[in-house]
Length: 198
Image 1 (cartoon, rainbow, N blue to C red):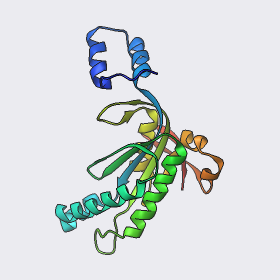
Image 2: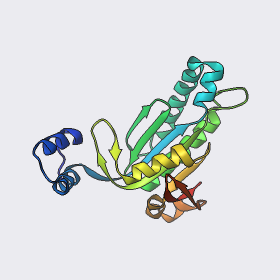
Image 3: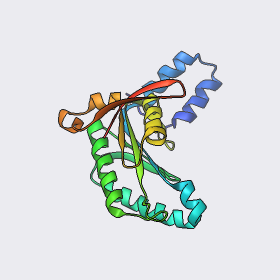
Image 4: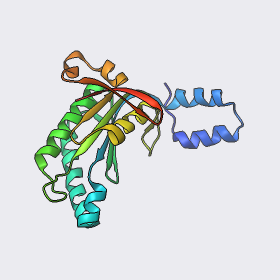
């Protein structure tokens, strides 16, 4: 697999300007930017409720503490790349096992930190994990079906404290890492999603 010095979108612009058929563009992008990765998508809870009650600065203080906690939690977890955007966090890993270990570490650390939000409520997160072939960009992370599914699990379906895995992620786990997971399904925007929850 070739690694291009260009970003995926720079390369895509060049291919589009060359009036190349879509199937050839797809092949070219896969050749240069396709990676098999596990992607972890984290979403925090209570943003609107906290800012409406306590103000944005209170939430930002809690968010900053949470970011520090998350960074510490993933040290040593074989993370390929990670980043924060507002109250969301994404991270990429070579294996599904590494992603699940990181997710468990994050949930444990956030729970132990007891970062205050509103009244007796503490900062909490939901995590979705996908695994499969993804297209990598230089600055925007990865794109692909498993990224989309991980986002839906982490942002739309998961409850505070949960870790949700796509079916592909579950099938890629080693036997010992898959213990304690429960199969579930949901329908979002007319799409049936089969997943596993911890």
